[in-house]
Length: 341
Image (tube, rainbow, N blue to C red):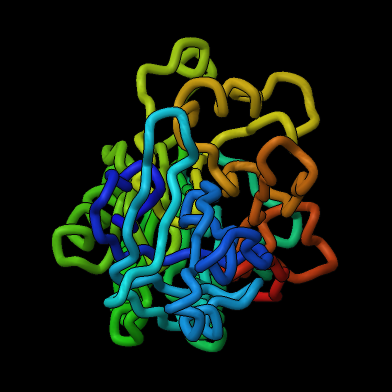
């Protein structure tokens, strides 16, 4: 866990990675510069460079990410905690790292068996191949050199064949061979056989469920949190609260209709409910969603929320177009692109 302002104790020597915000000349004798920096949580910390250590200021440029090594903490009662240079202090540049995540959802492997389970199918169902489309997800993950694939539920449909189960396993083995991690939450359609195969793959280290870990799972600069599908009744009184881990970014993954961005009557829950119950301690940067078969989003909501849509053309939204996925890059800034599958 990265060192933050809360960890600083008076007269200790610390190492801390920071973002440099601004620089100004110091007005008192023997002092060269003041810098304003932010820790990984965005807490502001003033940094004093003494005149005799002036050369250290060359490595502390506004806008840069740097690691301050063996800086002395000064934290007097009633005053702002600050860092000061000493004779053994050093500064090193930190190259910003970028974490790339591919968000997909609702693959519905087994869709062609819906007549056996009484489910509805689109009029062009004879053109739909959920298995080949799932391989498109794997190819996209490799092509875009992502660190992880996030699947927000309904990996499987109501009923599955052994071939459907094997398609998932083969795809996850291909991801694993490329050092790409597969994270998932369960949707409302996952059949017993599908859940059993997912447990087997999880035990083998080929997949990681986000359910059941209130501290989340880390990948690069991102910590992922998630819940399997819950009924709207459960959301009326949630009994889970996630715990932040200090990562630069936190992302919450759900298989629910959440309003916003869902705009129809009768959502499973509201975004306000999510943020004030399960995510009340998180301050998530993103909400990644499954369940709705359309790639809608609301980037202006209290927390930007994105549905990926299905990975195959099982939705009327995709009658005359191709399914998409969300490609997120978490670096100095957070960015998103839609890519075709």
